[in-house]
Image 1 (cartoon, rainbow, N blue to C red):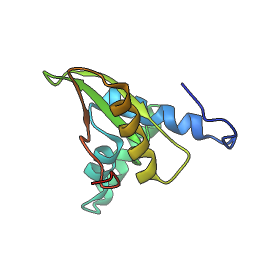
Image 2 (image 1 turned 120 degrees about the vertical axis):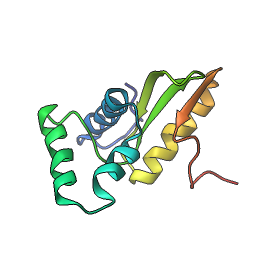
Image 3 (image 1 turned 90 degrees about the vertical axis):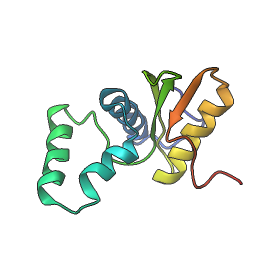
Image 4 (image 1 turned 45 degrees about the vertical axis):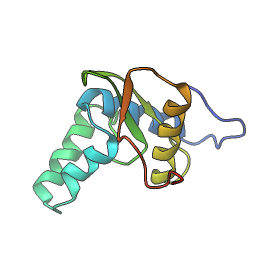
Length: 118
């Protein structure tokens, strides 16, 4: 786990870890996890999501900033969790970091981000 210099000492590292844990555990981005249980505004689904978070001792995070890294065949090989800015900015930074790492034969979920320069 890496941390930016002069970063606020709050729970950001724990949030980042929870985002990565969610991705590896479920094989989806944290945005996809959140959307699956909240988009329809179904209280039962929302309670299921809260139950998953509770059962894991708070180790899952239902907000963007966690991305999945997959090999070409689709197998999950890792994840990146970022926290400290807005959820959209966290997700963008995670994608930018993986892109900068030039991981040959790997792709992310999501593949791109709306904040990315066109």
